[in-house]
Image (cartoon, rainbow, N blue to C red; front, side, top):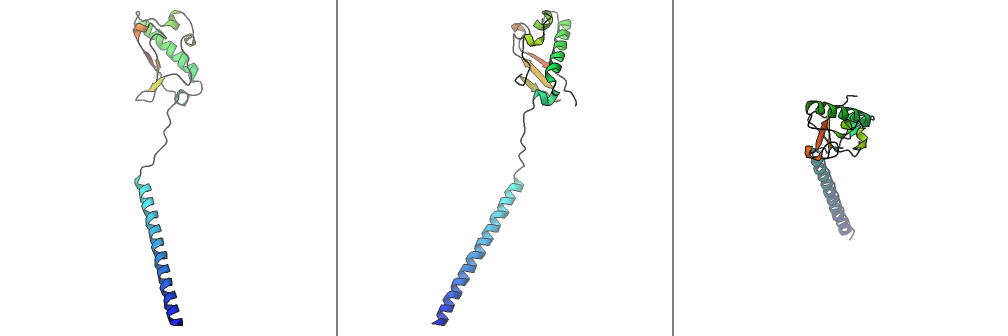
Length: 139
């Protein structure tokens, strides 16, 4: 009886070792597959939208106000038909629009912000939407 018990125990031990090896092999294959997927998948970089402050520095409001006001004056010199309210009224730009983190803008191909004012805010509505390309400051 002792011999049959030993055979039975040996057989159980063999089954147990086989299962253990199979689990280790499966675990190694799963880890290798996961590593392969990570290597194959491109790294996703979190891209944040640029802000006026990130493009122009912390004094962006003053810089934008000066630059846009200057551009309005230049445009009026070139085209007397177009009248910009702040220039014509000798009033600050802030009387007509608010420049802050919510100001609408796009970024051009060179990385410069282009400020966009809805029609009728800084000039007659007939002149449409007004945009002002502002050179980016290099800090």
